[in-house]
Length: 117
Image 1 (cartoon, helix red, strand yellow):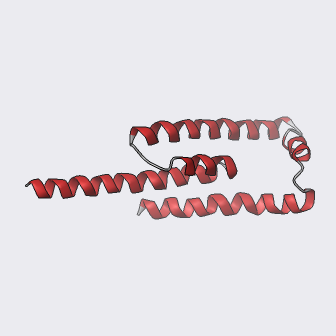
Image 2 (cartoon, helix red, strand yellow):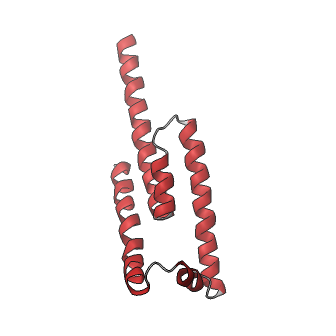
Image 3 (cartoon, helix red, strand yellow):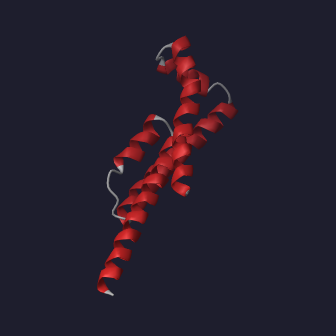
């Protein structure tokens, strides 16, 4: 069940941010200077963006640490998802991948125990 929740959150994590970004890009183009100017316009905007950046770096560290600990593969997917879209996509994608990985391990161990007994 939780896999479906993570899947829906992945979709929302792409659709909602891009629903704001695409109109901005169509209006302003791919101007990094204008983007930086607008995100650092005042202290509250800077606060929000710094929070997002720290969260993204923390998530990437978590993905790499937890993923290697669990011997997961394709860790580049949620890392790239975080860098390309944001934490709103990278986190639910990693959690979905982690849940699928844990379920595969559980199935393998359960099957192994049934064969032994």
